[in-house]
Amino acid sequence: MGNKIKLIATVKSPARESFLREGKGYSLKEIQEAGGNINQLRELNINIDYFRKSSHPENVEKLKTLKVPKKKEKSRSPFVKKEKKRTEFKPKKEKVKAKPKEILEEPSEKPTVKKKADTVKKEKIKTVKKGKVKIEEKGRPLTELSGLGAATAKKFTEIGVETIEVLIEENPEELSSLISGVSKERLEKWIEEGKELIKQ
Image 1 (tube, rainbow, N blue to C red):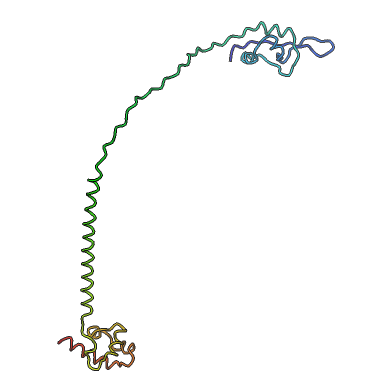
Image 2: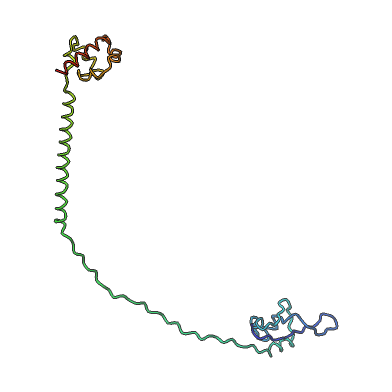
């Protein structure tokens, strides 16, 4: 805050016998007539009465005699526009295009090798499968057993017993319950006969 200057405003009493008395502060009208500034008076801690509308010449003269110190304004440097740095135009370098023919020719050879390898693998798998099937199919037919005809052999094949080699591994009691018209004793004889035939 600025220097403290004590100025007391005087006002007339509203009584019939009017006399001067100390007021709350200077009115806005008195400040205007004296050519003062409200903000400057605040800085000097001078009381201002915002509600009083009257003006007294004594108060106006006091305000005129008041010397308000002028504020030192800081000298501002003139605004100078900054020039933007311009980058020099550089032409784009043309990219050297690779030869497409040479690149395309190389991968075209690779898939042919893969295809050949795949076909070879498939052929091998097929030949192996065929060989296994033939091995499985090999075996003595059930019709070689005495008293076992084609009709009975068909019943055996329906339950998965197609050769003598398979028959000798089965349980005669279980087979008798699965094949109608064939007893357990007869199955035991065929199994024994089948074992003898395989040994030969």
